[in-house]
Amino acid sequence: MQRVERALISLTDKSGCEDFARALAALNIEILSTGGTARMLRTAGLTVTDVSAFTGFPEMLDGRVKTLHPLVHGGILHQRGNAAHQEQCRLHGIRPIDIVAVNLYAFGRTVADPGCTLAEAIENIDIGGPTLLRASAKNFHDVTVIVDPADYPQVLTELRDRGNTTLATRFRLACKVFALTASYDTAIAQWLGNVDPAADPLFTGADTHA
Image 1 (cartoon, rainbow, N blue to C red):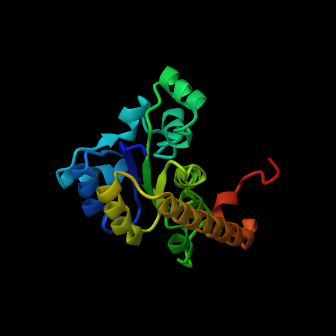
Image 2 (image 1 turned 90 degrees about the horizontal axis):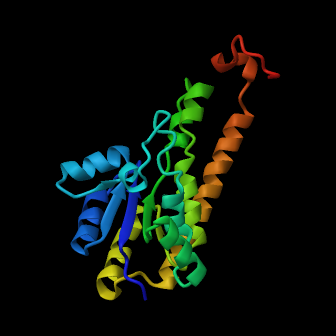
């Protein structure tokens, strides 16, 4: 069983994040992070590697592009027991990411405000988060994915006891991810489906047929 080397933590809901990251660091697990999560963990005295330093590519487009990079997704998606995958990772300098702790922009809370505009709603549609989660959940055989702080204790217990989580735990957490991303996309589709373009400032003066 492969030892966990690296975790990517990027959270909107930071409940329990500091304690979780501190426990990972105590197990000599490298922590990758982005934006506000990285700042919070550094303020708490933890050593954090920015994803931009890990990939050699800066965050850009007002933070719209942070984790969408082959070094991140290759690190998540490669199969550890697949010799061809391992050779490709070696050739391209891809290092494993074994734990992904991510939750999503609060789209539901944003659009619950009666004054929410279409532009505001769109800016709160998470792209990188669901992509990270789905990649990790797809590769649950090798990757532990966490969307709920309530799962931190079990993950840490297994890491301390075994050096990795059990396959059964990874599968359970992957199922949780697909339920979350399905409900997230459904909420977006339902809200957008009720937008009246003629009444929204985003469409004012725009060619709606362009």
